Image (cartoon, one colour):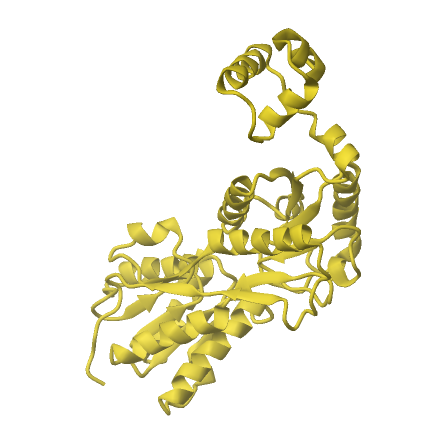
Length: 349
């Protein structure tokens, strides 16, 4: 491995001069800078960030722990994190726990299985001296791992904690569902069915609360019999389609796009035209929405924004060295955006 001393000797300059050039400091002549940079390119020199961190007690390295990068939300959140860190001259180290790949949805309450994967990763992050940690969850739930303070600052994205030490950045699920319901009401619909996710899920509860609030503001009674609980997958949308139809609904608010896709499949098989005979909306704005016929009206989650906000909070903590604020001030909700397409018909109530 080429060292900074060897670069300095080759260019007949001091080690400090090479260091200044690598760190973008001024007061180095253009000719000298070009000569040193050419030697660096030719030699393939790479800075030793760990050694630098040990000297400075700061590595400018952020650890990212993802529960599973195959979750639809995770890549976009990580992209938001990495873009923000790159702009701020921080490097990132990624660890993928692969929790869903290992155990599907059977690990949520299995704390010992979870810790058997999480704790070695935490030790590794500490061993390489990352300055801070960003934890990217696969779905919203309360994560107990952060109930006690970690040895380094940490921020959780896409989930909650009960910790006063760990800030969280989440979706504004309630406002997103409220906005979608208000949109359907404005389009003339009064008999609105809801295809919800798992009943015990935080996303489900928050979105149902937003739906209820929108109905209440318009003085429209909330009908629990028009709410059907699926499992976030297309098959549950298909399975529950007939039950929704029997309730006489004119529109269905689906709490994710996959379940809306199940409705589309059932309606198509039974000659029911989405956007004409019945209206359907989704949530998430996954890629599949543009391929639905007609294209699906849905709610877009700002996943890169969640990642960027989580990184912003963490770097602010690191760079200010301020004590973290209490959790009731340190919980951030990122708003959603309504994407109007062609799956909702305006009707006369």
